Length: 252
Image 1 (cartoon, rainbow, N blue to C red):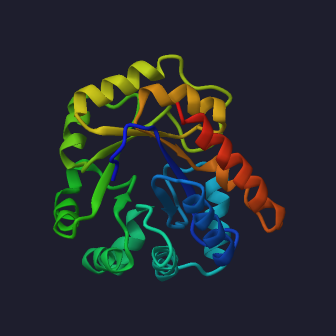
Image 2 (tube, rainbow, N blue to C red):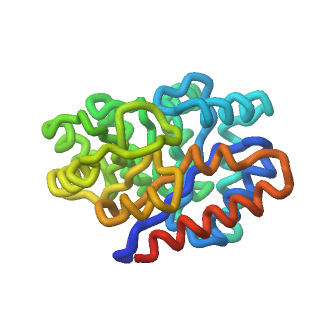
């Protein structure tokens, strides 16, 4: 997905939050303002890795009736206008319910480039990864600061290009500060895995993004974006300003 040496900006937004059309507006804003990869959250009722902001967005989206078909509809709408790589992030239950083969086929038809599934463990991912490879869909797995070297090596073997480094122990959401040794942690994962790294969880400002940029190939921003989006018309304008600030902070 990456073909430059710059720090990639990977914004995240929940599909269908606070409405289908508003989320589509946000995804289009990402593409218009230079996102390198767009990450789309598939709403799920029992997320393991997401904090209060994204849990609320999931709940609202599901209450609106958002389905996997709506997620693919959003992807198809974006594909009509933009070539920005698109990654879906979500959980296994809805995928199993639909059927893995059917889900991956819809990914191909709609234009999905990659998948992040936090509750798909490396030990159980073999068949899923093989099926994704056959369809040229990237698989991105997560590591955390307490992931062992042995497990990082296993994850590197089933990750296509990127490994997603969780910045700290815990769930998604804004933090006042990042761990002091985060640079050492990110350098270690990159050296050991031989993969490009994305870092997310707790990235909530241009200052945080700039602090992390020297140690990673890409920055993921989720909760800080989701919490800025609501039904107010000016929320899109305010988000555009925030997004431009983040983009500028990575142009080092």
